Length: 151
Length: 436
Image (cartoon, rainbow over all chains, first blue to last red; front, side, top):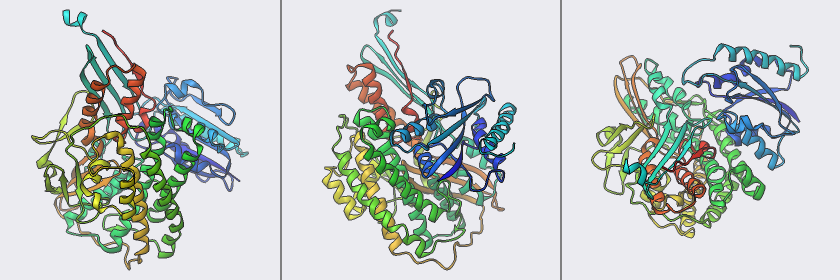
């Protein structure tokens, strides 16, 4: 059984790349045997990445109306993603559906943690806003701690 | 004004957004029980990419355009490669081309599976989403996961990666797989074919809302093959038959105020339809024997005009993609070189392939150094946009008496008939009804 960090996002859609920024920060900085991968968040692809995982950490951008850079840590193996992320957000919809799909099929890894980073700008071709870039650094540190490493 | 007070106005609006493939919304306005306006709003990334490509080297086009869509990156890669190669006078043939077709079959398997099982089937089975479907029919969703995984495997072995293949280049490949590597796919593809045949039987038994539309159906012509990875001509059921280089002599793109996307239409003829219904109608005889038999068994007539039955045609194409992949693997011999040399030439090049959703046309103008000076990309969804609106217009007109919620669900289902880039979004669209 394995641990996997799955970073969801689109490189070319502004703050939607928050998860991919976390992936860059984690590269070469994870415990041995832990793989970090990029994903576009399409639910079936996520389910396939969760196969054979006992711990899955998913990082994605959120669009819930909160302050850009707001970080949420959500252990979804117990509860669904909260409504404000499911209803009002385009982002995380893929992840939310994947979580519930996996739960319905008994395929959700026993420990599944979703990190959400609230984005502010989604313009095509734009880079990360500064608050989101900072939040990505914080999330990368949290994930390393979560996996038993020094920050 | 009297009009305002007397007319009963009903507005059905669905808003936003998708995660990967685009963003869109739908508006149907009715007055006094009659549909007065249908607007589909689609956000389209190609416009940004056209600008992004200018000034880049011609070899970069496949990798850059692959980022446009997470579901059909291979289509973008193939159409761009073909455009560059046509300009250089290079034809990628033999086993190099067979591998392209195999990779494209992997994409069709992935994309059609997602759409049939996870996005469209819930509409027919009266459940809100794939999550609900998994609760009432886990077997169906398990089959979808398995099929998707097999498509992924084709992409990984041929394309080098499961999403956004990295092995494709103008002129061919960075490296080619060995015969032994491809052979590992055979047992899975055989299973996938059986699962696809079963899928045809399952979806053929669904209830289809009534709607018959008189479409001009347009697909590529691939000279004796069911069109997938390439096609030199554009043909239709109304006599259109042109080389793809003449695309813009016959197709015009119109900017409409309500959408970011450009609407395509045939000059002096109007809307047209691309995708499974068109490919099937124009090239049915070129399906694999088992895919054709499955179509017959499913009761598909030679030309399907009810767009809701596209789910059955898509399942038939899934069978064909599995058969075609198996055939290509069986005939495979690893080519001595992974690619052909391509020397860029100044001028305008055209390329088109059949993305799962329909024709994807690319046009590039290069200068003598091989730098892209202009890029034009026409995706299938923008070609289908007018047909989608016309379907909605006809459907809502005929079913105006349905309760709002039912009507909204049927409208979403009608949009999903086209597997548009906004498919994922339409499960989450919200409805606004305005009674004047």
